[in-house]
Length: 468
Ligand SMILES: Cc1ncc(COP(=O)(O)O)c(C=O)c1O
Image (cartoon, rainbow, N blue to C red; front, side):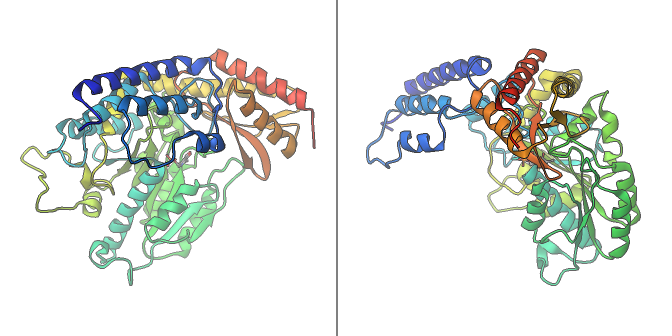
């Protein structure tokens, strides 16, 4: 091919290395906000489909220059937006190798290293998260993908118990599955139910002031329904970080033979920390769990785990075959496409293996507890200022801050903080009130990062006054 010689590959790698190194080294010094927004990039990014080719080096150079200005520095220590993790160095390296090797993780026959690293990483995940060791782990893109995958397994499992083969007959005419969720569930639970043909939740159970599902309400809901039931609970509310009372929920689900799914996108990682593991008490009794790697484990995007306690149902839901697939064998390798909705996909398990290998048990514990103590520091420092209120119980890494008890003022502070660039935090609404949402999810955030960020937040709060 004219566009790329073998020598060209070496130059590309060198160029990418230089750009990436500079970018990462500046994560702590450059503004966190993006310097170019969507309108600017629409103008600057070449958008005409040319007839002629372009040198690969020039393509990558152009992209790197635009991307360095068109990205938020989410990899840095003062990005507190959404619940976005950073990228641990070992995980970053592993992901780069996965791309350089261009491995397809669908079948062990295509990529032995993808198959074996996922197998090992799956076992490590179950140990760290204190889940049943026989559980089945699929490597997917994010928590939404994980919940969708888990609920597909739930659908198969429950309908099979009621004598209906959903893989054979589909959903038309099937026994109705009742779905019960908490009022403060994450939006992706609804999406996952919808993707599985289960429609809107049949019943929304009330939540308390921290977003925890109220057990008494769940109990009466469960008594109203017969037939197959799925209950979706969560460990780690996206705003407050609060945990549903899982032991009580799990025993109710057992008594009613309901499938319990836990959305633990980031909060399930508390199980890996000695100080916070109590928050996850009882999680091992659930039937399925959705957990992200790209949030608290600090594996690069995209990475999550769809875990179920029912390997046979899991395989029955996703297993597929074709005359040209090479599958199984005497030593039963992991053919990943049998555990997730995708067939071909990148070898994202390598980064999880590398992240856990580099941290070790203690490192994962330190990562979780370190972020939590930085969140507490945020809350303590901010609460000392007059007119600044912390609206949640800071149980893990999430802090909800309200400035001047005013929606307008809080929103103005959030916008000013984002524009100033020292740090970045987003907004949300909690119980009808506008709040700044701080999520400490990056391995590299230190005390000085929190102090610098608080200084800027308070300076802007004072400067903007209390505009009601
Ligand atoms: C509790 C919870 N569930 C699900 C999600 C969705 O995760 P993802 O974007 O990885 O699909 C999030 C994202 O923040 C979350 O906090």
